Amino acid sequence: MLKIIQSFDQKIVTYLNDLIQGWGFWNKLFTEYMVYSMPIIMLWLWTYDQKSKKVAMRGFASVVLAWPVIAYIVGKLVNRTRPFELGGMHELIFHRPTYSFPSDHAAALFAFAFSLWFSGYKKLSVFCLAIAIVVSSFRVATGLHWPTDIIAGAVVGLIAAYLIDLFDKPLNIIYDFILKIAKKLRLA
Image 1 (cartoon, rainbow, N blue to C red):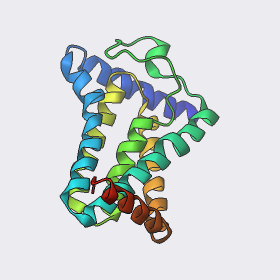
Image 2 (cartoon, rainbow, N blue to C red):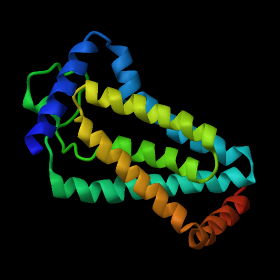
Image 3 (tube, one colour):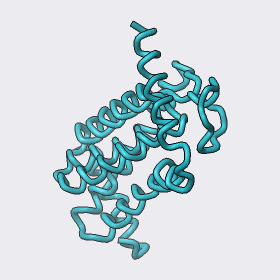
Image 4 (tube, helix red, strand yellow):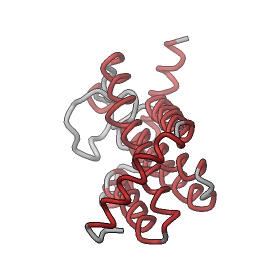
């Protein structure tokens, strides 16, 4: 079964890597720069109205739980090599050779998108899911991740967003405290 998954991963990465070989700037845009749309959307939510401030904090909490907590722990347990390290493909984006499973970027982007969904911001969630899919697809195409790294990252993101939603009532105490401080500092 593991050989079938590895063969599937290898075929997709090789095909996509050959497909976008000459895209230059677009590879960089969709692989790295588009990730910055997430903090921009969080900032917009923070400034939009009082209700959306808590949505921004839920999204931020989901990202923190997904990326530096769950994905980090899983990554330390799995230790999977990145596709570009194995050779046989074009190096389209420079990246230091670190472990690839699960994708931290996918975990963070999907956590934020699912958090928006659980908070009732369905249209914005769909927009953020589209961004997560585009970024994740390009991270596979550039040889930074295997498709299963992305799938695992999306699952980590979903779990993180679900847990933050599940513990929303106790976390509201923290959100209210942060809002109180932000108001005193004239940031809210």
